[in-house]
Structure formats: structure tokens, C-alpha cells
Image 1 (cartoon, rainbow, N blue to C red):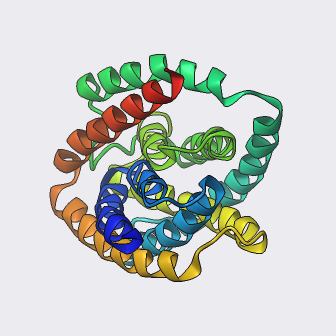
Image 2: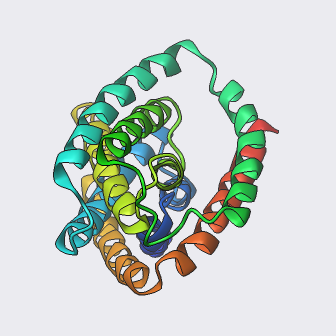
Length: 247
């Protein structure tokens, strides 16, 4: 039953994550529904989603969508910020952040609906300015990922297109690079502490790879047309999940 529950949802999560980020909002609950303890669910999800994200990042790199020097700087900053966020999470109650998200998420949805930021030609910043804002984005979202985490990929795409004025394909490629690094860092910690079901995570990871591969191909063909409704879908799931947790 664990495999029958997790694997199909891992495939769907991989597809969503490749297109718009936020696949963890689907895959992590799948592990919890299957009956895994919370920390084991998080660790096993890191393994399967990390496998899928690696394939998506490779696909974006193969298609020339990842400027590796810029991506490397963002990854280094995100890893540091994620550690900072994890430490903040030990000091602050997550319920405070969940309440804030109940206001942030609807505002984000309105922004997406009415703002024309998802463009293949949205690359009008000087390179230095774009690098600065992409590093700032990596820091902000890195702290968030360490502190709370859900929807990290979606927030990365939104900020990299809206704040750093990146092309949508470049923003998605860098987002996958950052997410891969934070997944691997989290997986290492949980693996050392015995919180990963390796066989289940590996098999679910194969389904995640397939979902990410198909999702990446759909993204390359559909671009902005497929991203906007998919992100709205992810935010709607995130809002319902957050509201349920608050209540």
C-alpha cells in the first residue's frame, strides 16, 4: 500500500515541480498518507524528489537554460541561508509563519493573474543587477526553505522572474539548481540520522524522474502558457494545506 499510494503521486509531483515548482506539496503528504512518521516522510521525500529534480536540472542545462556561474553563486548562498533558516525554525513557532502565508498566498495569486512577468523575453536587467537580485532571491527563499519549506520551487520562479527579471526558462533552470542543492543537504542530514526509507524513496524517485522528464518537455513546448495555471494550482493546494494546519 505504501508503494501504491506514494508512486503515482510522486509522478504527479515530479511533473508539477518541473513546470512550476512546489511538487513537495503533493509528494510529502503522499508519504504521510502512506503512514510514514513525519521525519522519515521528509527524508524519504528528499530522496525521491531530489532524484527527479536532478533530471529536471540536467534537462534545463542540456537546453542551455542554466548559466552555471550565476547558478553556483545562488546555490552557495541558498545552502548558507537554509542553515540559517533551520536555526531560526528552532527559535520561532511555525504557526506564526503559517498565518502570514494565509495573506501572502492570495496576494501572490493576484500578482500572477495580473502581472505579465512570465515571458521568454523578460531579460531586460544589466547582468550585474540580475546577479545581485538572483543571489538575494536565493538567500530569501533559502531561509524560507530551511525554516518551513513547502512551495520553495514556486517562490524561486516567481522571484527570479519578477525581482531579477530573468527569462522564464533561465529562472526555472536556476530554481532547479538551487532546489537540488537544498534537497541534497537536507537528505544528507536525515540519512545520517536514519530517517530515510531508501528502497521506497528510490522506487518513488524513478516515478519522480519520469514526471520531471515529461514535465520539462511540456514546459519547453508550452512555456508561459502552461506555467501560470500550474502555479495557481500549486498555490491553491498550498493555501488549503496551510489553512488546514492553522485551523
